[in-house]
Length: 277
Image 1 (spheres, rainbow, N blue to C red):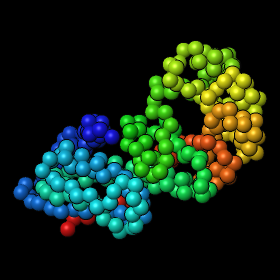
Image 2 (cartoon, rainbow, N blue to C red; image 1 turned 60 degrees about the vertical axis):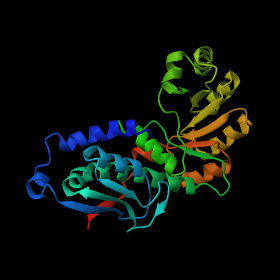
Image 3 (cartoon, one colour; image 1 turned 135 degrees about the vertical axis):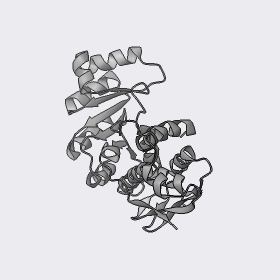
């Protein structure tokens, strides 16, 4: 993640808290007071967001120094010290909530992703990926968190890949027609992915030459049959209603990709506190 990208997100978040100043801090904390504050995990979590934590304090006050104790992607036990901020007490207090809001969510995404990845059968080559069901404005941070948790990213945005979904199929007049039009217009570097919700649509998509086929809300027996019919002619992605409990059985079938919107839209933020010495 580029600092310029992080700063754009951080500045917007900080403006929600600081556009009118910080009445409490300015009233009761001396201007020359200094402090040391530790970000501490209250629960076991996968660490994520060190650079974001640093940038929040830097945007409020470049003289605040942040020390990183745990690298992104590490599994941290409860009560572990993650990062330490040292400098102006006023600046640390002004940045505290924004910094925690962002990294708590990032750690939550990374932790949930790790649990999905760990649910795969040992030796599985199946990829766990996110979707575009991200928090508006925070996609870059959440997708980074998925990677920190051991997962992979789906397409970044609508312009990065061809993914024909049910409404595209309806608007184009059918699976074969949609794939044909996409093949004619898309750059030669783009693969064509098509969503299907039945084995009949799967057969049409295979005949039309789809490179990737998204099996939408298919039961485990249907996914098994889809794999048998495809015989390696296309990458198969299982999506829709994916729970951690289904990860193992889908991985055992050998589906290539499992995409789960829950990694970003249903995550619980990890509990992290900022403790002053």
